[in-house]
Image 1 (cartoon, rainbow, N blue to C red):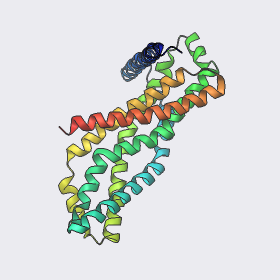
Image 2: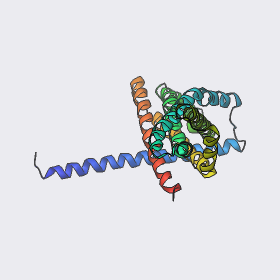
Image 3: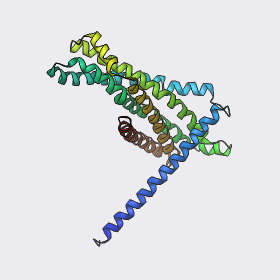
Length: 268
């Protein structure tokens, strides 16, 4: 191989990859706009959400996610207390553990860990369900009946997760703080009244609101990435599995990137 051709081949590969990436971004943006428009149409009464289907979706995506969200949040709160109290106790400041746990959970770890759990449970389900419909040509059947598949399948899932993920995040914050409280007063002998006082002294409404805003953005990312990749499934069952795996990985990476961006913006 001519060494002079290596830069050209590298440039060509980079260019093709960039075009593919931009194509995905364009398609994802168009689907997001269509899904949001579908939510607006349904809220205006133009083919509203089916009550039974909406309740079933909320139960599957939200209620059944509560146990695993509680478990993860309680463990995160426990770990935070164990790690921070170990360090602060050296300086006689273990009472400040409550402040660190409350702020860390509400601003960062609560929304982030809840989004990751929901990605693995709900986002994978979105990708698998719609991907199976794609390979079985059910999406084609919807188009044949003049039904927009994005309106029919994506809008309701997006609407549901935009409501549920902030609620799950608030629930996760509470459980995580409670778990940290129990460990702090039992393992390190922190005065319960001081722990509660420091929690509300240092945790502000801005901390909670920033976490809720993040969770709304995370809900948008999880739903749209999962559905977008499901709409592109090819190759039967193997293609569904590949799309589901890619949806989970891509969603988690984008959620972490979005968290970093929002943290940089909201801390200014």
